[in-house]
Length: 378
Image (cartoon, rainbow, N blue to C red; front, side, top):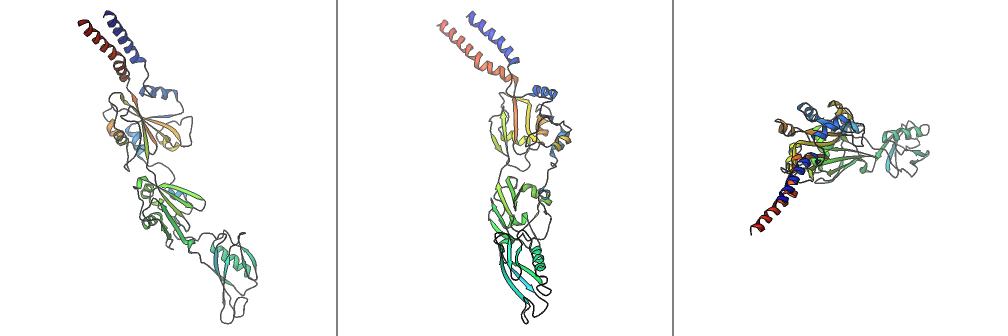
């Protein structure tokens, strides 16, 4: 029995040493300070009321109105003529016996098709290039081609293809539709309303505006929050609505490590901690709450933080630290806005390492000693 007690004493001593030497899983507040001194390729920010006020401000990102050329153009513009398109050309002359006039009828009509080379064939003129031109530009080109052949020619173009004046709203909407663009204009929210609205919450809906060969994306919540982003649509635009929930991941000393969806518009760090089941009381360090994300250079400058040495395609790697043992910590956590693809990490408390030692090493020995005592007594 004396031998077992010696072993226990040695194990206890070893456990106390291990408690101070075994590393915690992942970063801690100590390593946070060490990183700060080392100035690695990561920006380190201690969350304070002043810093959080900056995080609550809207980021200086381009709005949809700034991304899309001609976004504030109110009137619908006719898209350029394309290969294969059929349209009508009316020609008027100022005399009764002109090239295209006859008797009292001074107007002639021609249905023309844009061929594979982008030209139309016009009587007495031949091939006229029109592909890529607006109807106004094509009208002027035809009028110039007729100059000297017709007497004071006046030209008008009518597009027979009504498809050229439609926009398409599709994706996760209640009633996908093709809508005509009135001369007074059609905005994004008007088009969505005509399509029955999005099937998901505004903060879970992503918009993609497809205009010619370009795609411009934004959250539906941005269009609602920024009136300028509710831009005018143009004929042949396509508006795709997709259900795309914002997500965040949790690692470390949580009750459950997983990926979660943000189920509210104004989602904060306290929401994330609660949705993840809270801290694991057995091993979590309340002093070491970390939020990982990529930030813009403008945001880091606002925070008065030095830019890290490395930049990724998503931005500058940034770690925010919060100590929940501070009296104001819960107020701070409920004020930190979460962003899509954020990562929340809670470090393991150093005391939990000793707890592991007690549970997995010391307890079996004590149980064994108790069994030996029972056998000796018997």
